[in-house]
Length: 285
Image 1 (cartoon, rainbow, N blue to C red):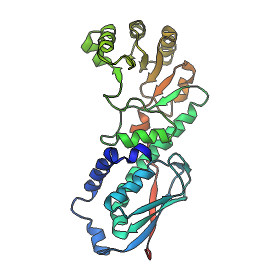
Image 2 (cartoon, rainbow, N blue to C red):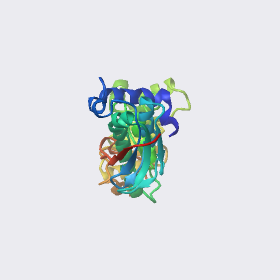
Image 3 (cartoon, helix red, strand yellow):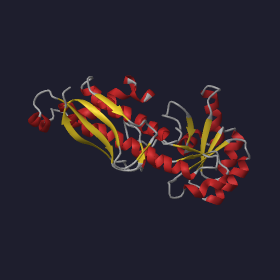
Image 4 (cartoon, rainbow, N blue to C red):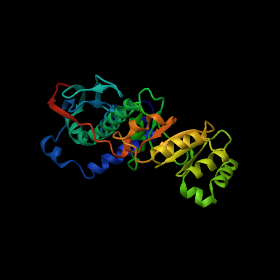
C-alpha cells in the first residue's frame, strides 16, 4: 500500500475511526467472546468493481492487535466480481469482531471511489485528456480517497493548499484582478511552481493568458464557450475543465482539446463498493 500505510500519515486517522466505533469497549463482543480465541473470517466482494484500500483494511486490525494477519488474492487496482473471496483475516476473534465495521468502511469507501474513477477514465479513452480529482474530499479522509482515485486510474490534483497554487475567484478579487494576482503570486512562490488560474468568462481567459498563467481552468462554462477559450489560449497554457463534471456528462467534453478534466464527483459522489466479512470460525491457531 506504499504511502497510505505509513504510520505518520494514516495510523492516527485509523485510530480515530476505531475510537469513534469503540469508545468504551465492544459490549456485544465482550458478551459472546469474553476471552482470547484464535479465529478466521473470509473477505468477500458483494459487487463487481475495483479494489482499493486493502492495506488500510489490514492496518485497522493490526492497530487493534499486531498479531492479526490478513492475506489477499488481489491487490489494489484489481477488478473483483460479486461473490469472489478476495482475502482472509486471522487473529483473536474479539479483534475480528470489533474491527470488522471500521475496516470494511474504509475498504468499501475507497473501492467505491476507485470503481467510479475507473468508469470515468474509460469514458475518456483515446482523448488524451487526464482525469483529475479535487479537494472535495471527506474531512480527515483525503489521504485515503485520493489514493483510491489513483487505484482507479485517475490522477491527483494538488493534495492541499500547501502543495500547489490555484487562484480562484476570491483570490482574484482579493488581488484586484487576474493580472495583479498572477504578478503577486509569481513574486511570492518559488520559480519552479506553476500558477493555475480559474476563469469564468472569455475576458478572464484572455487576461489569464496575457498574465502568463501556466494552467487555465475553465470553470462552469458551456461547451461552445470552452471551445472558444481553448482557441484563445492557443497553447500558451495548459487547459483544465471543471464544474459539475460527472460520469453522465464527461464524454461530451472529449472534443474540446483540453489537457485535464477535474471531477469532484470522484470523491464526493461515488457510491461504496460492498464487501463483507463472512464465515467467522474458530481455528487451532
